[in-house]
Amino acid sequence: MNGAQVERFFAILKAANPAPQTELEFASVFELLTAVLLSAQATDVGVNKATRRLFAVANTPAQVLALGQDGLESHIKTIGLYRSKAKHLLQTCAMLIEQHGGEVPRSRTELEALPGVGRKTANVVLNVAFGEPTMAVDTHIFRVGNRTGLAPGKTPLAVELGLLDRIPEAYLVDAHHWLILHGRYVCQARKPLCNVCTVINECDTGRNLKSAPA
View 1: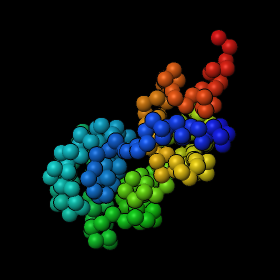
View 2 (view 1 turned 60 degrees about the vertical axis):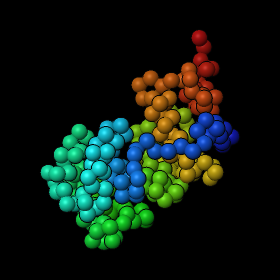
View 3 (view 1 turned 120 degrees about the vertical axis):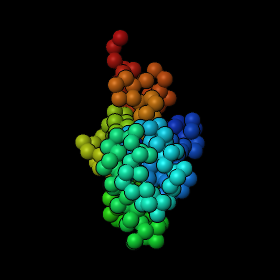
């Protein structure tokens, strides 16, 4: 995918969805951090179902910490790996209270120092909560980056750096959402819906499909 194709790719996605949003439900930066921490190897739908129960009774670090391990687990047990996620979330809540006055920090270094928070989670918080042009490479973005030719790479970090380098600045803040939604609903893993894809003419795989002999 060349520079002109990258520009058209994002112009088309923006025209269809000018203000993309995360599908995780949250009403504060702490709720966002919690939802993203819980979302590893889980669907947004499943996380939202659990956090609706959790946030109704505890939506601050102090309130979550007061639940304890068993109390927190009871609210999130429908999510995969809920025991380890509960442990990490409680440790994170303690650190937020002890080191950050109960507030979620807005630096990558401080975010990644929180238990259970890796680069991808930090990128989501920095982008969604603080409007920074970061790229949280999940399985959807990794697939789209490679399949389309937008930013091929063998590792999530390689794809992330490639995307940050190739996406025009005007699209960068929202690009994370467009790529996730495109991967989730159109450029799906097992059977990409190329027949309804609006960016097929810009996509390396799509152009190859269209040029292949019948």
